[in-house]
Image (spheres, one colour):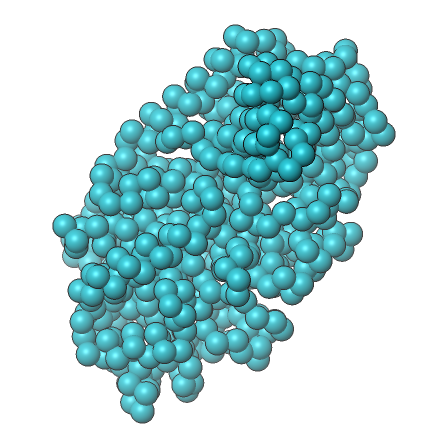
Length: 598
């Protein structure tokens, strides 16, 4: 095997986990049974040790094509050649009450007669433990991992299965209109497998298709780029952990921001920072149920503040606080990019901007969805008081710099948002609050930003106090209503950003400064920032440029409309995939631009 490009994958899922399916018909990444569980397939990070589940049509010089069935997360992978046409239909069933969520792979020959080879090579616990395989009969096997956290899987098929060493193999031939199917599921004592027949497969496919299309029918977005916006919405839904309503930043870990580099992080957690973007996107599209579920997760975090009234930067799907970082030294990493990390050491950093994101999300939810509770308000009051006492502290910033701490503009900006939204909520709902203190603090933050973070010689706001560099995070200044989108100071800042950080329509986060971020190497343009840039252009009234750049940026998505975190020099996708924040920023930019084009 050899590594496929990150952008050659698409995802399927069941609202508990996802699988990355390559255009070559191989599932090369899957954590099971949850997003934050260890992997059972991780060939994406080590093509020899990681494990995979591959179905390979033996079509010489075959050309692949991959697409989602309309308004669903059901994936179709075709392979064409002069000798025949094959297709693989991949999906996971959505079962809200059951513990068993099936991974179903249906293989069909469309034209000709095609030979196939299937290899299911699971490698449990990040390929750190062995497993044994028990043959039930010629078309069903049980796979059990060793170790204290034993996991048991069942693989059953419509064709004979062979056991070869620690893998399961099937070789078969299908003529036109013939199919074979493979179903993998977790084994529970109380659960008996459904018979693998036409009725089961047809029912599972129809129920899954109906689930996604009914969910998609709720969307209230009818504007331009509807298909693009809806694909982003479907992706965000796949990144939602249904039991708690939390949305993960990305379903992967260890995918590099630079090929061969060490900027390889674990994104299978929920960042407080993502809250405002998530709530905004779901409410704007009409998904109030999803916004409500995520708000309950946020409320639970606010009910578990640190003793001093502060929050963590990120949490586990169920609110877990300990996300200690470690390295999988036995994995070589994607295209030899190491180390491969699990856990995230940034969880105990100080990042002051998260408070503004949180308060903005609560403010939007209270305004557009339903009134917040009294208990949540009491916790928010503690949190805002903490911000008032700590907003001048240096921190690690939005980009989670692992080098020096600084007094970052974006952190100041979002502290201003936190206090401002707290004041608005208190006044809107007549909640008790120390408004005199909050108003004074809000004014102090505003005045300091204007006086201490403005470079008069360059006529621009700068990254941190005392610097002369720029940072794309300040693109949020007009989006959070700190400054008007046509304010002269903002327009001159935008011009400076365009000169320093924008290449055509693509935006970099900042100029590499190893002494600040603490990590050697470079990175690509940041797709989320590119969509922020479009929305700034839209709000400033430059609609023609905004539309032109928006349509250029969406052309950089992969073949099924998904985005990794970054785009490299050749526009190859880099970083964890797909990234929720990019899809959230896309929805926001599309909504604003479509409304203004009117």
